[in-house]
Image 1 (cartoon, rainbow, N blue to C red):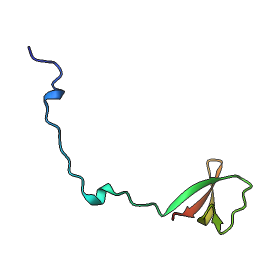
Image 2: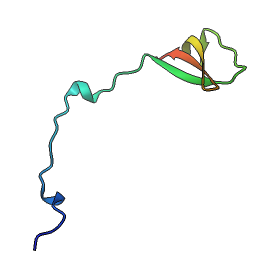
Image 3: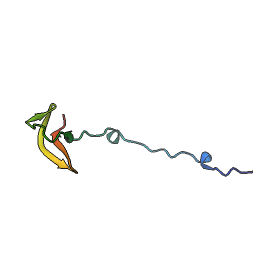
Image 4: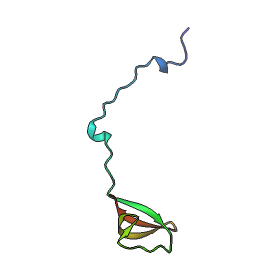
Length: 66
């Protein structure tokens, strides 16, 4: 009798991942959620502020990533 599940008999496909694909690049800008009445200056929590953003009723600030 042959088994119905032949997936165990198939050889696994090997993929080669290069070094460049393995390291994820850092994003330059990130969004931080803030309160509506928060005071936004040149820096917010140690990040340099680019501009305030309102998105789907929530308030964010676009900052440069360290």
